[in-house]
Image 1: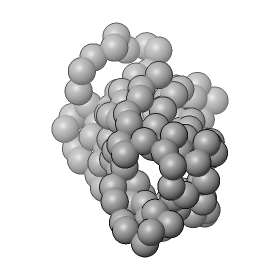
Image 2: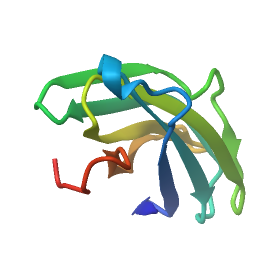
Image 3: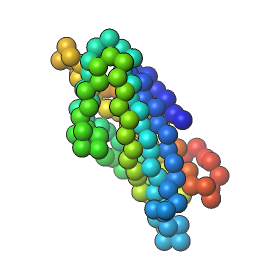
Image 4: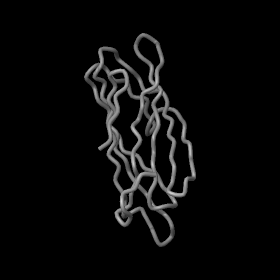
Length: 130
């Protein structure tokens, strides 16, 4: 599990290789990742946008930006958590993802929350730092 805290917002990530959706013989690898966002602060916040930076084992880089996560822009009151699962395909058996969420507090001030960098490793490959 990977974890980062920014302004009392705790983000944890649990990546998992998807054997069912991968086809190594065709150069297609797929991971799911489950993210939990927990508001440990005193202010209600809303996730507005996401920004991902994805790098495969050959150093090819991709960026993904857009509103919310899985079609939602969750509002988290103090003590609330939001959990979701999404996925990412790669053409290599390993890679790395990192990013941030753009949030806005009930005061109207915007800020970025770090999503910890996490490794995408297929079970056929040894774990490596990409």
